[in-house]
Amino acid sequence: MNPVATGFAIRTEALTKRFGSQLAVDGVNLSVPVGSVFGFLGPNGSGKTTTIRLLLGLASATSGEIEVLGRRMPDDLRTVLPEVGALVEGPGFYPYLSGAANLHRLDSADGHAASATRRTRVQTALERVGLSHAAGKKVKAYSLGMKQRLGIANALLTPRRLLVLDEPTNGLDPQGTREVRSLIRSLAAEGTTVFVSSHLLAEIEQVCTDAAVMSVGRLVAQGTISELRGVGGARVRLETPDPAGAAAVLSRFGMTVAHSSGDSGELVAAFGDRETAPDVVVAALVEAGVRVRSFTIDRPSLEQRFVDLTGEGFDVAG
Image (cartoon, rainbow, N blue to C red; front, top):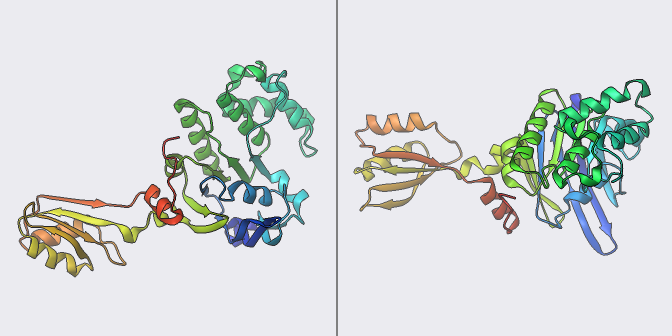
């Protein structure tokens, strides 16, 4: 099965994993669009890393089905994995070898990698993650952020159709975080599907096109970032000395006034099933003779949606 034909780089059906009596992954139906930057969200212990290990054949599912790049896993493991780059549970390297030497050793272990072009591949991968200057430096002297970038470089030694990154910005300073974010965008622009598991909500919002939310082993939501924020949750906040006239106009667009303060002239109205463009609403208000002092639209943040879905707080900044 061709992933371009199905439209999904990753797809699972009723994916379940038990550890004894503990249900770590509970009937997950995941759909990751081809070419997307897909954020995989959830609090600690929600089942994110276990799900990733199942996708990559690092653990066996108790039940359910997995397709990666259009092929069944783990049946087609040997065919699929050469097209998948992964950084899972932090990078592991030989501390007394340089960054370049580590990549050479890892590349030489890849039976699909041509030895004649190994040096070029290593240099290119180091350049892409901003580590050319530290190529000859021993990894034991690398910062955590540098080790993280070296792990991403390892995942990029050969062209990949799918890149799976578990906490890719862990330990990075703001500049390093921006570099990784730019790298992820460039990979997606080249056609690579990037699957990013992260506890940094701001990173997911800035770099991802789609996302899924895990909670206690279950998938509680998935879709585009806009869908997850919830368009239906948007509200109009309007200040006017003509609240009655304003309410009448807003009702024509399917909005219900949730709050009205005669003292301040403020109205808060919730959109219905469809959201009308702000300029259309304002034009209708003015045409009806409603005096508009201010008009804003408040949208629920991804953070609030996460709290609503999981009942837990989230690490927004890092």
